[in-house]
Amino acid sequence: MRSRSRRDGNLRRQIAYLAARLVAEEGVTDFAFAKQKAARQAGLTEARLLPDNREIEAALRDYQDLFQSETQPEELRALREAALALMRQLAPFRPVLVGPVWGGTANQFSEITLQVFADDAKELALFLVNHRWRHEDDTRLARVAHAAPTPLARVRLWCGETPALLQVFRPEDERRLARASSEEDLASRGRIADLEAILAA
Image (cartoon, rainbow, N blue to C red):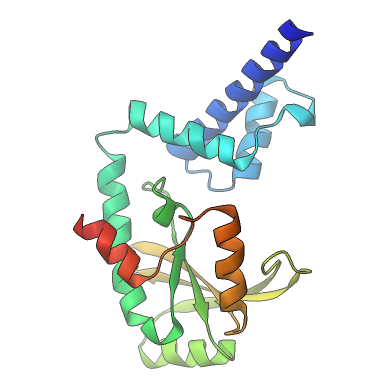
């Protein structure tokens, strides 16, 4: 039993490493897709042995430390500087940076992901038009702080040469998102002042 447990643990770590390499080297941004592809490469058929997202993120950090220590920090800083510039322009919508750019695992393949808050998605669209931002709108079902899935307006645009995704929430969602984030991970999101402090450090 102990040898099987050790073997299962080793296989789980192998899948996490393979998934991390897909993210770091091939630009796969969806952890779920990365671990499914990694599992196929390793010949794994047991879903219970798939690593969770935290395990993949940890493996990704290790991979970047080992193989991308000369390039990834510079790529991350450039993305964070672009994110800060975008957040300052979107200040009326109280932007919050989430995802790999905030978490520190972003690389050349990553996009900036912001949560923004508006009474109506049209308000943001009008703002972008008035400021001559090229953008595309779409909607996707999403959970807000563990609630039932509801339509979430999203806007894709370019910040210089960097792609950005804006997730448009209602103002009343802001506190629930912050509370849910704190319950899961105190460092999973940041506002303008938070990002300014990191870049100044």
